[in-house]
Image 1 (cartoon, one colour):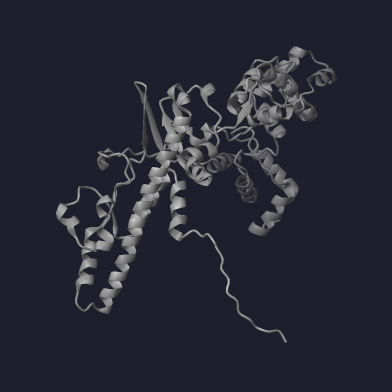
Image 2: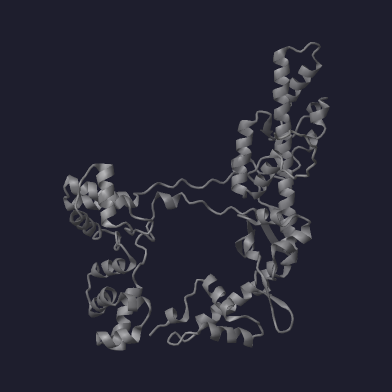
Length: 472
């Protein structure tokens, strides 16, 4: 029979309190979301309110010592005085909603005199188009969904016929199943069916795989055309739009948010002026009426049960308000200290925005300079922007790894990418530079780099391999 025994054991564990977790979340928020978070806290906590004017000196003499001790510093988290009134608040103009792409397509279909059955199929097909305007689902899958969702039994031929009608609508190329079909639809929609357009259609329909792989010489031989004729057909293809919905504006694009900078950096007379862009984040304070209510409940001789409950409620809300004000203050101080460290590290760059002056910098460099943990720096940098006299940049932009040179110095990998982009931009398109040739170019400039690293940076720049960059 197993015996039962007791033992005493000590364990050391590190756990984050709910307040610490919420403080971390506040640190991650960009300015626009912080404004919304502050407004939400004001709505949920009746003790917390915006400070719209200076507090009456008589009100600061209340004697609830546990809560009033730091009351005079409650709004000190504002690191810049805000003298703007609410009347000065800038508001975005109201944008009228236009016709959505789906409604635009259905409106065009109304002129084709389709039957109710065909219109049901058309509405379903239009509803399955992706954001680029392509129809990625097979006909059989559409037929199954129509049977299950609409109770409509249709054949593949009926669906293909409706899809063919949709492909005649504007914008040209809508409803295509792949890129090749999209380009062919656009070419056939052109009024001027010149020899170059007809040759382009032949290339995309009969030699699409070879066209994608840029086997131009082989295609010229098989088509029996001259290089000039082939180049004219390529010019027609290059004018087409691979994404039919590009440039089409509907209500979804009108609702896309603007970038709100979190920092504003000015440079005048050789001096930097760094500020937090927290103009719309209100000053906060604890409502003095609740302090008086708490004081009255504490000083009452025989508090009733209702008084005890009210006092407990007020205590909880006051503690929550004081923690929130403190967390906001801590957030602003952490952001400013981190941004000052970045500014000091990249001081030469921030003078004129010359990308070549960006020094290699990683999160650990700023963590060492500020004394914060790397995870804290990562949260500060995430989704934050700074407005400078030469543009608005995401804080992540200033971070890059270093690469040693022959002289023993380190250069930012962004400088390597710039050299690669310039070399590829000025290459002979008939004989593009291979990754090995690009490696030799960088080696000649004193940068030690492997071919596979060149390929990695080229892919990060969104530049295709040499074979796919070849032109006639």
